[in-house]
Image 1 (cartoon, rainbow, N blue to C red):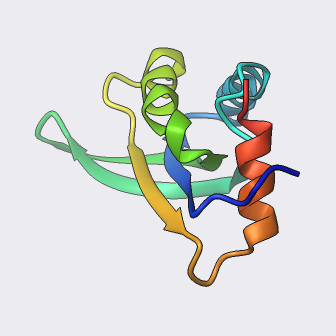
Image 2 (cartoon, rainbow, N blue to C red):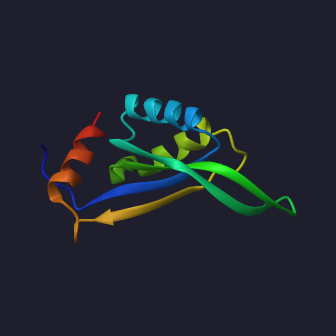
Length: 112
């Protein structure tokens, strides 16, 4: 493994169905923009869209990436996503309280 880095990126997104998020996750892995995708079970989202309250079943995905790939990952998710305005929420995860070995693995998997 490479030297541990002090942070990684974690991106939260929601998708309309399992097929679309799994397809995107495989592309993101192939392009080395992520080290891992956690695809959760369906959840119910209630939100306002175009002045209407909507209810939809959505799939939540968490993408783990290196901090140097975070911006490129957000842009690529936008390109792959079927929604007009996808939820793309990114967080920096620092080394405090995190596994140094895991952070190093994420960084290595996102290397060119």
